[in-house]
Amino acid sequence: MRRIFVLLLAAIIMLYAVPVYADADVVTFGISVYNSAEDAYVVPYCQLTCSSATTYMDTLGLLEEQGSLYADYDEQGWPYAVTPAGEENGQKLQAVGNKGFVIKVNGVLIDENNAGELVSDGSIVEWIYTDTGASSSDNFSVKNKAILWNESYATALRDAGIWLSYREQEDASYFMAMSAAGRSISSGTVVSLPSGFYEEDYTDAAFCAEALFLLSVCGYDEQTSAVADSIETLAGTEIAPDNVMLNIQILRAFDCRAYELPEGAENNREMLVRRVLQAQNSDGGFARMHGFDSDLEATVEAITVLSAYESTQVADAIRRAVSYLASWLQEDGIRPYGMLSSAQVTAKIVVAMVCAEIDPYDERFSIEGVPMADILLKWQNTDGGFMQEHDETSSPAATQDAVIALAALREGTNPYILDPIIEPNVLQTENSDGIGKEESGNTDPFFSGMEIAGILLGAGFLLLLIAFLKIRRFHRS
Image (cartoon, rainbow, N blue to C red; front, side, top):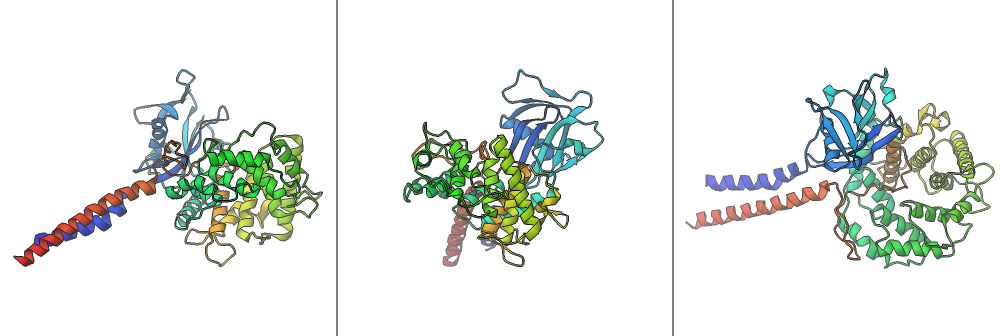
């Protein structure tokens, strides 16, 4: 009888304790290597997922393992030279004189004594080659990281991603947010997206633009027929020039992965940019339709798409649009606008500021001295989600927009430009066209953990069956 009790106890442990432990050490974090002497990245910002605990010291080695760079270490394990991948015969970045490597974690400089600490989920690790003799750690800033980014923002992004992971959606904002937060998404949903495209009216320009952007966010490209057909439809379909929001939507879809348009495309980039610019009013704001009053949402969306272009006319348009946003904010404060909640308005203004390269501390975008990015965090509930309005429950729409804004703040770049794309953490082996897809370099923590849990669960049931048979045999005897 004692043996039967032990078997039952072992089965219970296998069923409940072990599967929980299987995912305990999975950590997803962001990392980059920056050469401040040349004002250039050795390794641009990317995301890594580890299935076991790792230290800040080890993060450079992980980049080396995936072939992003080659590093030489001293006896203490600290790097003294780094060579970018593909430049093995080129000049190394070497620790000579005052030049060397430092680490920032969530915007905070750490020393070698703390480099052995474990990386937390959602952390931002920056290896920086710089003048280590500088008097202030402010000199160790990375160019495209907003100065407001710190541990509180990293925590907010991580918690919001966890909240969203339990509330699956099937739109581009959700997939963008999950990717930005380093969270796993359903591989079945992603794989079925291209085939679902043909179940709708894919001759409709608005649907095609939305579908093209969604597929692009999920890692699909021109080799997928749904993407190729979307591009062809959008390039050749007659679009109402007065519909500014649709022209913005199409331009964003084209630019998200720098798609090459068919020769002689009616809706080329130059034409789309011209249509957007023509919607700017004398007050600096953009209208949703030509000839109408300026609209806050149209203005922030116009800033995001126009920021990808360089010309005197575009730069002037963005400058005037920023002035319009600042005036609106100082006059009305943060409030709901149209279909947008107060939290969404805040998030979209933060994205526009990043795209327009506005200083996060710009007084025009502060409320009583509090920067917009800090105000955004005030909309987060204790469960990790973001509320639409104060004292409300968390909302998927508000949380998605907030996560996208936090990702823009973290990376200092337009979140809608996906090339190089931060792909969702999904292992894809085949799309709906039967075209093989490369598996993501990052291990998907959710599915690897679930696979382990499934194996252990099966083993647990097997043990229970054995225990049941032994009990039955015991009673018969």
